[in-house]
Length: 108
Length: 113
Image (cartoon, chains in turn red, orange):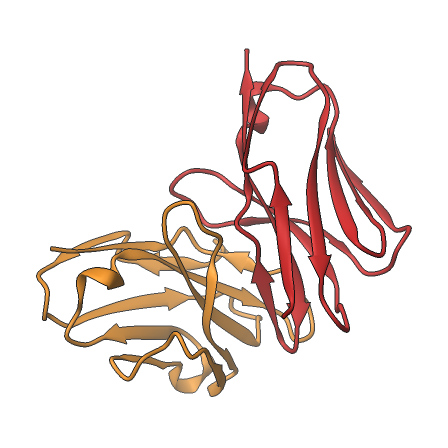
């Protein structure tokens, strides 16, 4: 059965403390691996799409990478405003399927 | 364009009542999606439209749920005879054809009491 698993479920970091979020997947015929950010009470906000192993995308303090089995979202020198739930998702047919997310909390 | 708009933002209803939510997508987007999200979970796919055609419905979408997108513009999601298990955030998203960069609305939070 196709699925993605995100780890850890929750992460607390001090401001400036870099870390990585993991998304491991077992999906046949992967049609894109996606990262979204979701703030409390709001809909997810699109961050990145990765299509092939070795691909990397960057946006401000965030960098997403993709291997054949997993994707990482690296957060460099995070700030309190980076606190959110980060969702990993994969494309199947004409829709995307989400993982459960990692709740990230950056302490000032 | 102000993005994807969903109304109402919050809805409290008694069990057994019918409710209807509305989604106004980004005007040039062909595709419109409905997802449901409960606390601590990622969004779950419910259904999607390409223009006015409903192309796929999840098995999560029981017979009590119906969605429409008349004229390929706004969409409505109706839940009949609501149950407590229907309490969730209902999210709408839109995208251009073949583009997975979905733009989500802020959702409608449904509470069934």
